[in-house]
Length: 99
Image: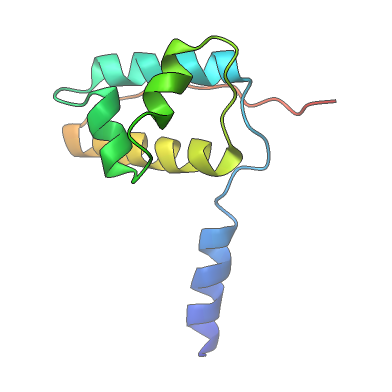
């Protein structure tokens, strides 16, 4: 594998966040982001992210529900991609280290 391709793979891997935001903060951020994006619902976002059809809806409607780091990453990337396509500025989400 050429060195430049290897660097690109490492860079992509390094974009995964180290910490999840608290579930209640991430839930609010997703809901706020969906409200800003035209034509994007929780269901359509879940489909675009290749999530199970109830994963996102359950997370958004169940206050004590947690979410996996990998799912947080996929949702964040897709929401930012959709926002860029629509030229919409998404709100900030605070990520805090636990402990």
